[in-house]
Length: 150
Image (tube, rainbow, N blue to C red; front, top):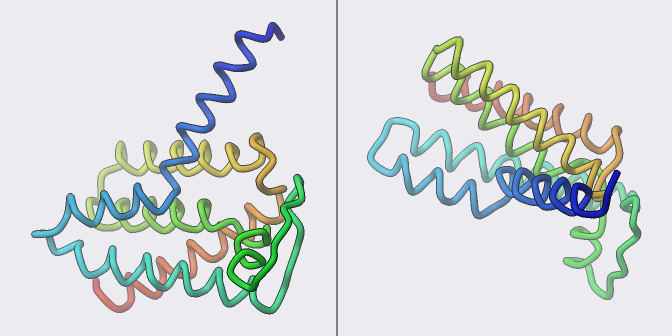
């Protein structure tokens, strides 16, 4: 591949991976502030983050590109398993699919979740097992939120 295409592809995946980030989650919460989805979004975001942090507290796995750390917060961030971006986007995909009940939206959510998940691998932040763990956390969070709110 030529260098320009590689740079564009890397930039594309940087943009895609942001959809699983904290800023995107906060933006969605603000967008649905006067909606019945507000509490499920907040609760699911908190549960997802807490589950990932607890797992990383007890099980440390280096990222494909190792990161150095000097304290506990940095160590949690430097841990690779499970992928928080993947967990967030899977939770959001399932929640939106169930809430809106549209086949078209469900397909779009699946595509976005797959792209975000793959972007974590492409950008060498995670490997497949980390993404699989993130999917499991996202699905588990979705089940809890759907049980509590729907």
